[in-house]
Image 1 (cartoon, rainbow, N blue to C red):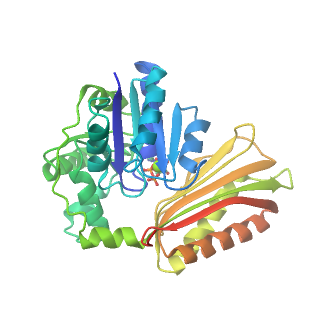
Image 2 (image 1 turned 90 degrees about the vertical axis):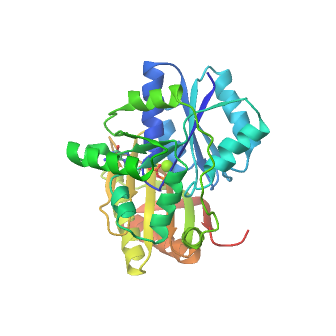
Length: 354
Ligand SMILES: Nc1nc2c(ncn2[C@@H]2O[C@H](COP(=O)(O)OP(=O)(O)OP(=O)(O)O)[C@@H](O)[C@H]2O)c(=O)[nH]1
Ligand SMILES: [Mg+2]
């Protein structure tokens, strides 16, 4: 079997978490599975680092969307299949709208019958249904609507946050709104329903439909144009024994959140990952200017040397985002008495012309 699935979905819906949980589950229960983190920045980004730190069979494709580099994607897939992998899942950078056409149809066109496409999968999280059913006609609603129209399989993730009744209601509403798609509820965090997801992907097939999406839609274009992607990696030397890496990441996220809020901007997802050479790591996520900061993983012991990678997508002009993040890193690191060496930084305004 040479099965390949794209995981599309909104920022923070849990694509990376689900890919990690699924590849680990499938490999333990059935046969080899692997994941690809696809990002626009250079190598060594948070999602791929995290997958490696968690011991997943993972690769990264960076600098370009797999929508537009089919040769790179094919080579990576062939490497995995040659290694006995049966199922490969990849995410999509940005909003992913158009991935069905560009990746599934594009790969089938360039390499006919070379791969078996699993149902085109779109991840959602609790709350999506409310946005869609509220009648909102803003940027966010148009993105979610376009993403879900592409789906063969809609995965409602984070069901651990819902009661049974809430979960059933959200699943039913998604099914009513997108009747062409199958809908299932899972939790990447607890591992609930990963067997069902595995079966849908390995036994199901992509419909290869052509959804009626207006890619030139002004709300969609407007939403894309507002976004900036930011990637920074640095090394931090710790001066004292009582350094708390998790508290440092949390303070950094809080400082950035405060600046974003003060500027009236939005930050759909900020990922902060730091690790020490022996593999001890911490991860903090922020999913919105007004949402609580989440500690996704705590350092298990004190560390003296730290590599930090911060990736975010924010609705904020790139120059301002750059200034906010650098100033937050500087002030929080000074407070924690860290010596920094920044070795890589990229800030991409998605509205800017190439
Ligand atoms: N409660 C709960 N939280 C989850 C679950 N899956 C993911 N999360 C959290 O949701 C946040 C976003 O998860 P990611 O997997 O990074 O989301 P993503 O879709 O890959 O995000 P981008 O890479 O920014 O597009 C993180 O803080 C995760 O810990 C889940 O099943 N339950
Ligand atoms: Mg991700």
